[in-house]
Length: 522
Image (tube, rainbow, N blue to C red; front, side, top):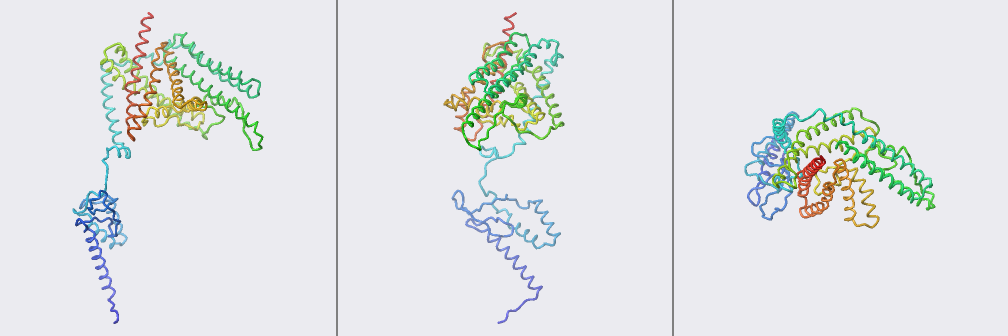
């Protein structure tokens, strides 16, 4: 029997009708399942991959990756696609999409299709942006601190004195300035010793004795000058910081050259043609190292190609602004609080706690400004002027979950120096890790005490005790981190001990001890 052909127009009409009815019936069939309804996963009626029910209830719902829309909800992208299809003549595609939406997004369509966590749950809170909460915190801080500024000005007035930035009494600190300048002769002496050691004119024993003498002078000479002269506290702190930096740079210079000397001697003993190890003592490399923003000596450093003068100018302006802000907070807020307080260990306990909490906010601002000025602005300015490439002066220490993480990320130049010249040498000499860590904290505690106690001319060892107290805190926060995985308990403890309790307590202790010493001296 011959096949009867329809006319072209009638065949096209029939085909379109069959296609539309087939799509409609297919969509209707897809909505029926074990529970009477089944969701559609595609707008064109294509099959979707079925999965077993997660909880084993056999409800028959399929999982979807696209969010469900309510009936009648419009989508700008869909409207745009529809208009583009009409403009291009693809009206049939637009009709199919409209038909699919008509049957897919009805009241009977499932609204809950997969397992989701609440946005503030512990598993989801760190996987999303918190920009809105950050903005809220900024707004609250501005509002709260604006009230405190107004209250402080109404109570005390403007406390910034004309002699805060410069005074004729500052001229009495000239011995400290001369001491700071003459300290730069010690690296030159160390260079001469290393040059003679390279030429093998001095034995290794004599080299060690000379370097011990040089590094000891680098610390004791500034201490004696500060204790002998009646200098300001800020001048003494700056000189002690410079002395500690010079001491650490000298130790790194001596230790690195000694290691290169040992390697050169070992390579001389190996008779191989491909052995090429250069050991050179260069004054140029030492001079660059002494001014570079690093404490670890090496023969060469990664360098940047040029100096961005405009960038340096902007950072310098920021440095001036934030330094002035620090001075304003100290004069306007911290000084009145400590002057109107009692000794925290000799007065009323509740009153002492109230003073510490009141002091914690301005002290935190000063500490953050100090970190930003020194570690971000000043070190980056110095690195830019010297084309110093490695500018990892700090890491995200504010996210530290343990005290151990904080000390590894907060001051990278000192951390690298400790690891290179204290921690790993102890391990190589058979000292256990716990003892090596304790030695590193001990060295840090000694220098913190020197930088504070010597300018105050008061040796109460508060700074030393505060640093050594970090050792049990390291153990405690590591234990809590192991117990509560992916939690911020250790981070909260870090902020509490450092900014709420530790630093304000040290400020009050040193202030009152200094005032009591001056009162008894009179």
